[in-house]
Figure 1 (tube, rainbow, N blue to C red):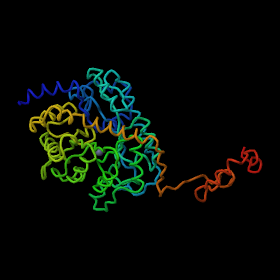
Figure 2: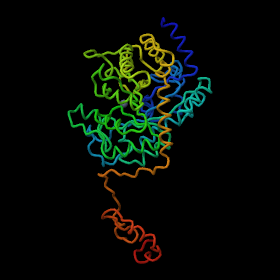
Figure 3: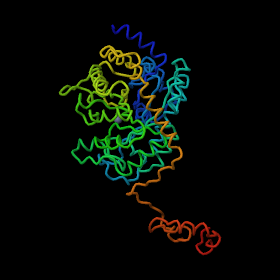
Figure 4: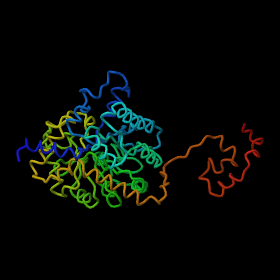
Length: 420
Ligand SMILES: [Zn+2]
């Protein structure tokens, strides 16, 4: 069928099926370009912007569900980030990303709505007659939880629906693909990482395997109870880059029910020896994945406003998704149902399955595992009062010691230790 007709068919599919993009870095642009000051007239999201993302072009692109990324770079000057105990402002900085996404949605509430479930994401899109984009969030790296599963849980409560296990640095949970590129050992998922996957599944946080090492991918896919996603990765066989997914891992994704959302970053999709990439390269990646594992595991994860370059020729910004879908359709001869899966239904299905797995695990207790390298630091003065803080300054308190505190009447020690 000619492309012109397919464009009309695509418009018809859009009525019931949103385009979903699982990775857009606009929030970081708002950080470094505007220091989050979006109230002023200088920032108008509904007018053309110099970034790759604005409301007009999102609408042209048929985007119905947008995952905005809350990304902060690895904090340690050591690129591979082996020193996990160095104090940092990473949680504050991530919360600011969460905050700016919510404030942006509030400011443009006629065109966007913040959602927290797969059903809500679709319902908002349909009930608004495709006029309101459902907005949700991902966090790009477990370095952003600062070694603590408590932070994972709190991000979920704030509305974060996936976390990428690493960015471009290792962390106490997993090994990053940049470690492999640097020629270092691929240790895969750590013991704490295993516990973390369990907790993700229990609370319904989607596991994102973009940026992680090969062994981390395999380790996770062996134990994950819910579908995983690759929020912005393409096919390794087409472009040999560690950020992409190898064929044996794709087979595991098929078994797991996961979704690989193809990335548009030119250096991840260009053919060998060619610097520039085009929309056709991106189509090649999609078709490779589809030919290998079928239509149930493919999605879109552009990386717009995070690619540090212009997009591939033909995929320059968020208005171009229709061209990609139509080209994939034209070249594959896929059925309407399969094209709808690629546009967004696979991603909604995986999200929903994560929610159902969480529901089935609701009687399990929160995972309390701590990172073994964590130093529990307390001020010196508490060691002066062992009745109140037994074990402090030595090792972990035993339950017996704890109960002793409960029996203690605070007034009894007040005079002795001058605690007023
Ligand atoms: Zn990324």
